[in-house]
Image (cartoon, rainbow, N blue to C red; front, side, top):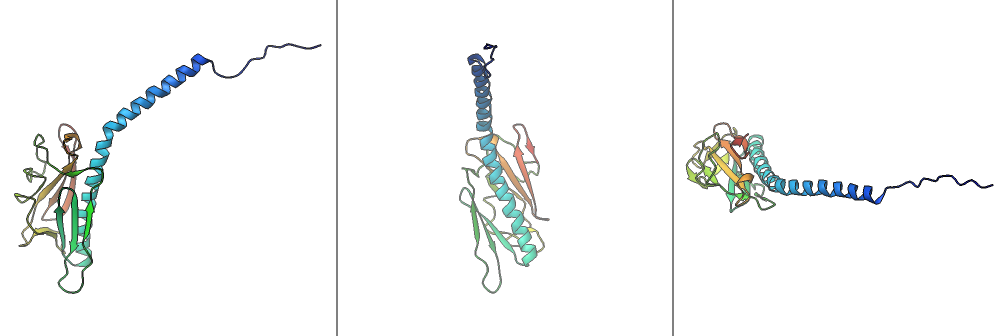
Length: 190
């Protein structure tokens, strides 16, 4: 005698599968839109981090090696760091370029940073667009020009045409302190 029991087939119905795929599609779409909005911010943060790292490393190098270290902002997206030696063969200069399209740029619609060093141009030190020809960290950690006068200033950067990606790095000449700022849509945040 054979028994014919009710066998239940396990699995999902077509309707359950379609609902599940719909939910996955909605979540995926939301994440793509969010990622697209955040991508410029990631690029700007990366450039700001490079500026911060290079300036802080140059200051530490000047103090540790007991040689002044010159900083140059080159073109639209490069920093060159050169250790200055009075005698002997110094190490070669180090030049770093930003990745992802970030550049030195100032947005006319945004105010100056809280440090108020000026925002007339993307690189603005001691009232000079582009900064003095020579800017360097000294062995005591201060930031000076070619005449050993303390230099305060700001480097503005971001993605061209995208004020939401605005970032700024300030340097306080007397201490060599390097600070970072990002634009949150209404004000500069440290």
